[in-house]
Length: 418
Length: 100
Image 1 (tube, rainbow over the protein chains, first blue to last red):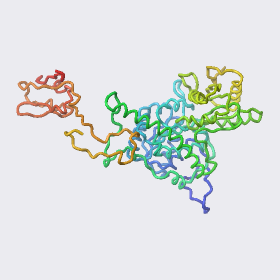
Image 2: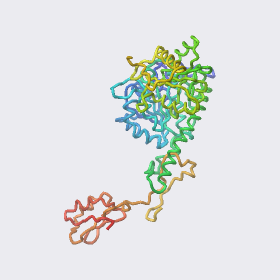
Image 3: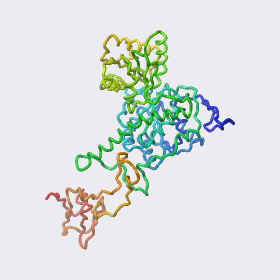
Image 4: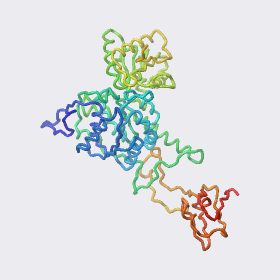
């Protein structure tokens, strides 16, 4: 798609002009991985992630990335291989989605329990069945209780920058958790945009010293049994198991602070074009009477609809979640401070509550506000369906109506025929 | 640490400054041996045993000991699986419940 190389020689100026490129989201993710210099990647292709791992394979084959690549026989092996690599001290990466993520679930759960700082891109894809190869957040949402950090991107530039930052976050000693960078299948994976490549030397400085297996290792000089049988009802089994679970929760909690600091540091180093809201983005929210909530690439169209409504005199704002896991409770509580009605748009389904998963998570935050805020769940963009400005006009209208009438117990299905 | 084990060069998490709530690891060997969870033990009828060594060949934990005129088992490592009794061509081995 482009002919520029990662290591273009800087110009004579002290600070070279940023290298501009045109690329798709999958390619941006691969370039972000290359900038983070992992030692090992393991891959198994699956739509819509395929062009990402093809790009990685090419970067390695062309000698532009110094990493071992393992073409495993399936996703379960992909993640298991990377666990071994991380235990041996390697910085590791993979990408998957949908059924691939489902096949990966056993080692997926173990990765966070072993506190291995892997990075995995989920090029989000809707759940099967019905058979579908198109975008949707169902895959990432389905594994949200497995202890991984999950950050959703809005733009191709954000994909690139967040991918690099994800390694820094995962390896932070106060965090030590695996990280998913979620980018929308179809809309971001194949969406082509202009990006600004961060300088490799500056990224190296940002990343600092690699320290992956200081807490657990496959090392003859410090022999240990990794993940021995722990728990049961006797002896110190129960308290030992609880100690590790609490440790995971502490790591997740620390991640909120580290993500915030890291985004600030990143923007300071690389410029305002690289500034992204770390947890929750507040858009046109200061004097907003009501607001809509979004996640991922749908936010672009939603912001256009907000601008349009603002121009028409509507006091409406937008809240975008970037960090979904750990859920940014305090940041969202702050964003909701003046909001009197809320519409939450999900690209996936919470089958238990008959609503969207982000809507259901947000209900807990609304409870903490201590005042009643009518809220409505909207579900749209399933299996690649488009969420347009017209869609968000409807979301804004129906959310405004909550100022004067009660919300429905049913979600609003945005792409339904009725 | 049991007397029957040699000390293993343990890596001390605490001395290395590693919090004990990260990855579950064990730096000491468990003192348990397979014999500690045996519920049936093999008993050899010395009159029937012909030292054919079929039990020795099949034993998954290699606990078969050779004696002058018969084979017997190391009860520290025998886990009581009963494969020896099943395979013995002379039917010389009986599995007896440990509770008896």
